[in-house]
Amino acid sequence: MFDLFSVLQGAMQVLVGAIMARRQDELIKLKPHGNLSPNVSPFSEEGTKAEYNLIFKVKKTGSKGVNATIERPIPSSIARFIWQLEQFNIKASELNLCKGNLSLFNNLNSNLTQLSQVRPTTYNAHLDAVCDYLETNLVEYGNGEYRRNYVRQHQLRRFFAMAFFWSKGFDGMDALRWMLGHSDMEHLYHYISESETGAVLNGAKASVIVRGVVDSTSELAKLEGIEDVRKIIAERLTGDSSTPITIESVSEAAEDYDDESYLTVPHISQLQKEQRIETEVIQLLKEGRITLEPEFFTFEGADGNTTQSFNLILKIKDLD
Image (tube, rainbow, N blue to C red):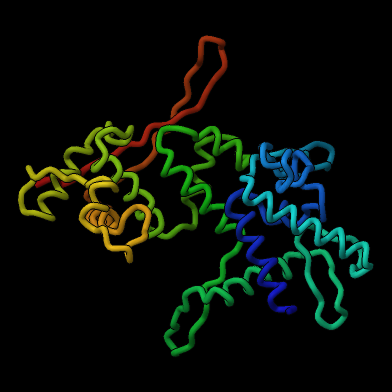
């Protein structure tokens, strides 16, 4: 039971940490209850109609040593988990099962059978517990020793930023900056890309380029040079650069693969085709034949206010 409680806390930390992209200190200091706005049950009639925010203190914002308290949107599905955890904390306090004050996430001491606030060490221990429970990948070292990959909140926060940045493309960067609490877009991009391996960034960039190649209606299809990339990929896949690259719709794929064992969304056939194209794009990025980077610029609006924006620049080398 004690181990499963740690797994439960770790699972909650992963869900809230990934969807809200907060700093670990901000999550550790969440209150035992009263973290949602509005502070009503998401299971109630009123709650099912509400749009929830998570209330927290921002680590790097405030004045006179006092962190500012702000709110950021949170999905109702995650709000329900938080509400249930808060009700557990309230009941545990009423039964005097606590050692000192509680936080939203708490540690259960198996020797004392008491709950206490999480600290960085116990917060990470919960993350380790859920990784062990879900059996995340093992890495083999040169001496034959195997070690498990353990996730940390900094990685979840960066995952949110990378997924949002590369999936939104031209739109929503200011919303991402607002969500994460960064001062400007260029600083945000450095945050996204620092300490990441080439494979991680190339995978994110490849997904953007593939969308531009296969979806002529997307904003990404307007990238200068996307047609040249399409020709390179067509040449690699078919031997003819003039071959059009298309991905059939989910409905069309369903007609070809109507077996009930195929339950993926998007359909398995679509995923397989996009994967082939993405593999080629990743190889082009590795070879340095193409690059995709943001170019930041500022402009002054009619109201005199300065705004920062960016364009994604696709560059192609060595087309021969």
